[in-house]
Image (cartoon, rainbow, N blue to C red; front, side, top):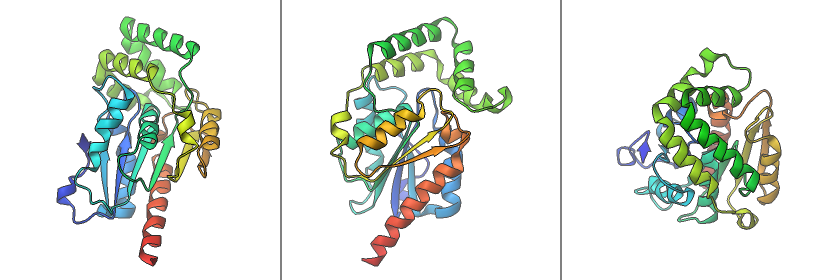
Length: 256
């Protein structure tokens, strides 16, 4: 588990936030989000970024991700945020909680079960990773962002390049084998924020609308002129949503 801060080094954080990256994303995808949160909340929140690079399945990723909250006091409000593949991990955590969660963000993701059509598409992606990894990640970064130049998306491409085709294939296989959790979503009581770019071509807005309809009380926010890579493209907006939620929770706790 890679953490941006050490919980033992913090004096009683007021909240704990776990960020879960998407496929072929390093923890740096969250850097601007974390910076914006720190500007507003300082060290009042413990922030961790889950390591989801080596596990063979989504449930294994979720199981390891829970360790981010080890050492966090039982009465500390805990939050999770999953982007893209990380959204599948977050859904797994919500469906099979190990501790109470005060809130969750599902960003550019889907609750749809894997279909024969999507499996066939992912098999083609695996072949592309094997045959021409560089061309594939260049195309993925371009397709996943809204009106970005090659220079602007190079940080995304560089992170993908560093992880390599083996990680891409392992994560793709994990996504293909994920569990269908749709029936569990209607039982959730955790406050959930669902965010998606209106120009997301990888997980289109209708998939986020579907999630929001399934989860009682979920709040949906569609962001204009944003593609799939929302933590990269809209870090401030995501951070503002997180800070507002954590601030509100703290205000309610103080009022009791």
